[in-house]
Image 1 (cartoon, rainbow, N blue to C red):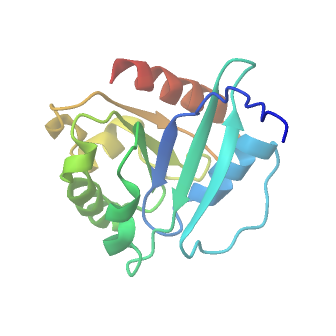
Image 2 (tube, helix red, strand yellow):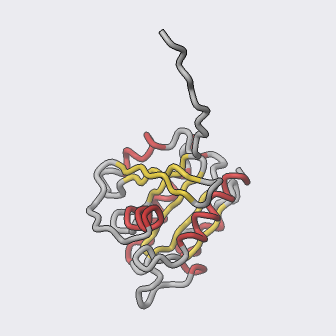
Length: 176
């Protein structure tokens, strides 16, 4: 038998993409990965994609379904997470309280202790969307003093702010 040659594969960091259903998580992920808007349907389970940011940096992103029935399963995806990206539909003020509670619950998990948080206020292209500061207040982000966090506005449909957001996510990994 011949010798088996093994290549040294660089393991890409694990990023979790979570948020309520219809926040635009899958649209955002595929827009960033493929550069185009793809038809998506509600995620049952999860999607995994590698996002190449530049020649030296890529991220393995797990997009986990956000329906109410899926949220109890979020805890099974947390081990090994390097950055949590929580996506909110910034145009849906009626669900901000629900998003705030879901975020608080997931951040209380021991596997996320000290893990950096990126909040993406998606759908900023829609009329009457609150400002990033308002979204931050509604989600009570200032209460998370035990971790590094950022919030950025974006639009998955238009591609606005996505590249900057993912570059910031990569930088957050180095602050952990």
